[in-house]
Image (cartoon, rainbow, N blue to C red; front, top):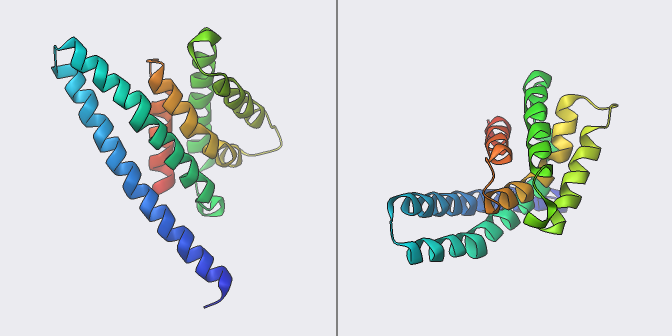
Length: 167
């Protein structure tokens, strides 16, 4: 086996490991969110929200960013029709988040949103190419959006995009 092939095998293994970690973290997040809905105990709710904000969401953000950096973009096959639909929803989510007063979210989010806008405005690329370019930027925004208690437009769009890509 050549060195380049060995690297690809380690990337594939890391992607599999990251997928497993993300599945566990999302399962934990869902469990915590269910408990938040069920419990009436205000101190417990506060504590759980803080654990989500300080432990789970940063890990999800970090692992998803690494996942999409490693994910080989040439293997992503999304029809232009599907990509166009997702880009429209992504654009709407970005606009929705940008209407929130900037004091409500971290400054890093502003630059991420500007990066996505710039990449989406590139007229020389097809819809699927644009979507592939913005994939690594979306996980961080969805995590911030969850922290900000927005309508979750970016998160919903991201969930659909991930399903399309992982098919």
